[in-house]
Image 1: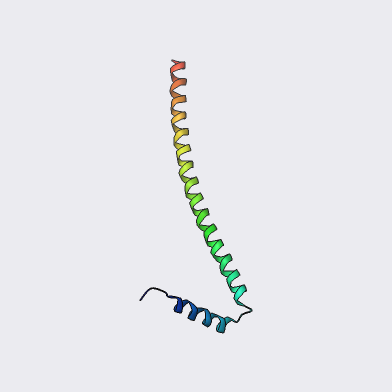
Image 2 (image 1 turned 30 degrees about the horizontal axis):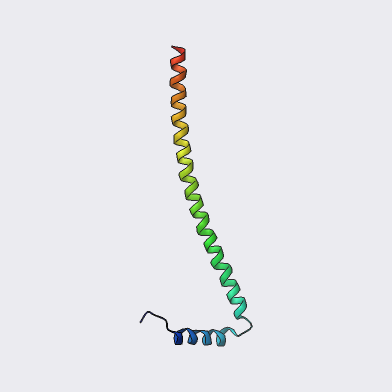
Length: 79
């Protein structure tokens, strides 16, 4: 019931041809392609932002460790 057969796809194509006309179908496909491309780019940007946040947290943690070691070394030198 949830599967599309060849007849279903052809019926949808005929309906699209009647509704949009043969001159507007290429424009419709082009705009849908741009929309899908934009959506994928948005998802990639979200993934990159999440990785940046994770990397920044690791760098911040390493900087805190380095600062702690530096203060211990300076305290030992002052003693």
